[in-house]
Image (tube, rainbow, N blue to C red; front, side, top):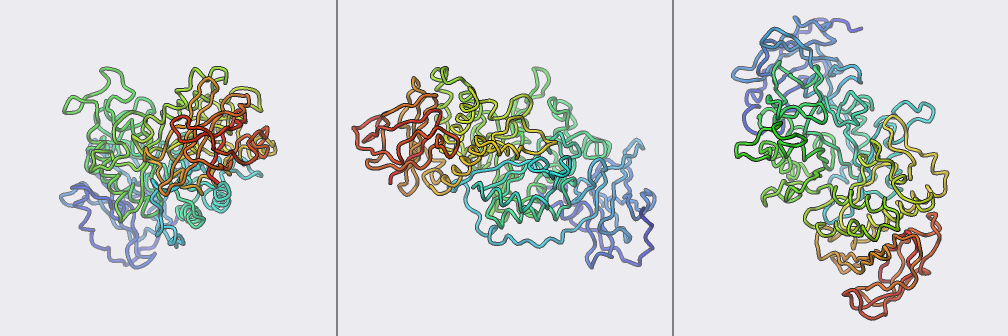
Length: 634
């Protein structure tokens, strides 16, 4: 139980002059001024508390040092400002606290600090005074971040609570620090270049997977303290792995103790229910046009890049931000000032956030989960785009999974689903996502989506990965996809690591590992990833479920990908080839090593045939069943 600290003769530092202007113009540093900040001079110097609450009639800081008594540490409004501040000489690092906010009608609610750097584990909701003491060791990584568009990028999407749990206590999350070394070693072994973490920001409800955030500046306490997350990111960086954090600026939950009706009025949320209430998720939508909200979100984007050394932010639910009529029927939405459906304030915020993160002083990149045909999502703002670096290609994902789910006998009638993505592959800078969203809510696991008996399911899954890794675009695979999991993802359990005792599943893991390492070693697959001239079709034969293409690198490298997505072997299949001579079989997803039948080309083919399919020469290739073969000039 907390004890009241003795009075300490500490002279309070002056009120920071910056507080008065934080609601005027763009500011991406509000986290340096709002929240709880220990005074300079050491851990016994007291704490300055500051909060944005323009409509409050009275605010007090309550916490461990004052027995949660609102009469002890009242806050004062900063003159000519919507900010409130107080200094407590008795508050210390590690003390829990909240803001007791009284609205204009005399009703008081104790709110967590929106700018808290640390929080209690759920179901408790207090903020905690925190200053990081972490010493980073990733200087070499941070100084040599690669330009992702012309570099290999293969992303392993991870939910930290269910990647691997303690076998002795399967219901206990291992957390940031406990997972750090094991996750880094596994990702390096598997050959992925980046890890994308489902939201690590504070969220009380585990079933939201982190997408209903209540503490935007504090890591989820269920997985450890803030410096534990820094240790995880640092460990990944020192292993050569980039870190992408999921970021959720679109909406937030309605918990009374968090951001909702923070000063008794709609402060963070839009006051108009047609713009401020999300019909799908039961959450509030941020008021993107309000300057204080805009600064909160811009500062939050910068905070995770600066303070936690994140390499990128993957922005969730961008479409819900862009459209005023998102998930709303006629009459349930209000047009913008021009009569359109675009949320112009959200577009402006997205522009500002992307410019900020791409700035040389920040050094990150951004990825949009955007499911519509909004033009220029991954084009720079000064060229009329939204300014993201990359965009998830959800159209490719849906079409490709629909194709692979078909029985091979019907695939010839759906060949367009397999190939259509190339028609727009260079309209944006794309990520090809097989994400967590595709293995939940009755959609089945990737393995279970595949048709046929067990051998055919495994073969189809290996072929899907072989096709995906060669296709234009960066790759993203949700954890468990490489394990050929039987069942949908369970956020309350662990991945099925024991399933690797099945040779067929171990073969899928091995093929993902080999695909990653082969991909990273071949500039033909990534150095011109966003250039149409880096791709050409070689063959499309719907009647035989065959498709082939070539990828070309910036220095003349070339690789061909040939897919036979029928369950029968095609012998001596003619494929046009861009270069004559011997071509080595780099990878064959039907190899016995992976659990396949071992049909192949004895390690190589020779392109010495007549011109075919618009290419100067051709080769006769044995195409294994339900498989993808990669070839490159010897």
